[in-house]
Image 1 (tube, rainbow, N blue to C red):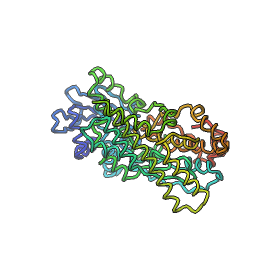
Image 2: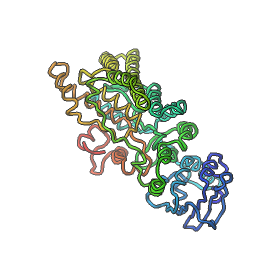
Image 3: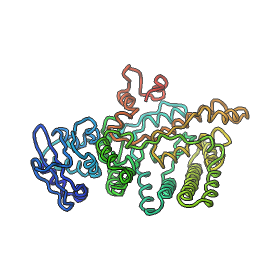
Length: 493
């Protein structure tokens, strides 16, 4: 273990992180009994010494050799190790939390160290791509659902990349303006794509089934898992080496000491800080900052974002100070969402040049027309109401955090639109059902990227994933066709 700590000290980023702690930290390994302490109180030297420190440490970590190995081999999530008492602590837990930024480097160093010592089994085998599955679905919804359920979730760094780029460029400006500019930058650069068979468009990520990253909030908690996130039990995700490099070297370093939690700590009382330091690893959902939000879709559909844009501009002219900044940010955000919808209209028109199916060409024309009308203007029809809701929901999830956003009482919200369209003859019950199904498939296009311990509680689809691998569920029923699977298990997942 001492040799491994020496290698850690040789890494400039790890050394800088530990020097920033300016603390004495004791690590105690049991079974076998080994001790080492790290002293960075000077802020200039990282002294590593075997044994037990003669002075009281700021933090003591006690864990077994097996737990130590599993954490640094990338087999055990460090937050889960704290939550399950695999790591026992005494003192200021927040100190070790500040080192999680360098966990990917520490894991790589440990693996290389083990390989140099001749140890085996430290490098996880690559996940083989699933063999192409012949589609068994014949309907539009069947094909969309089958594609969604048979797609391995992927990490998407685009939201983190563009959010970070904007924040770097707007330092010193009012925070509410920075947020609006960041949303604008993301929506102007996020990959826009329309899948085959889709009637409702708009997505948080560039993947068919993806997970965005929120580095200003919960993102740091998954950084140490990226190299093994494809092999974990709950909610595995595919992530490329290039994405790991970009996150570790370009995106996440900006947020070190700059996250929402860091800014909150500057405003907390000493008593709150002490309490948070003791329990922070054990309140993952609150640390994650999940949305818990319901937007006023009814008014948005009735008035359109252009109305809100004009209201914000008018009120902003008459306001001053922070109130003026708030209205400016609101106007900016409305403009960004309207332009985002316009990008999808342009994408639909470009796909027309490559499409040879007349029926699909007609659908793409309708998608383009709808995206140019909503959410900028009031939604006059049922299809436009659904599409407007999707764009507004996506924008809100990108700006805040994609988990726990409610779509409200759709029955009450959408009934006036479907009733009017049905009465006018412009919509059939079958088409209304298909559009609603397309909407539900689309709102499930992303999966919140939680770390392993949170995913154990909020995974939601592990049982189904295991059933697909085996071909049957626990009762022996066919799970190879996801469409038929959901017919007899409508509430699963």
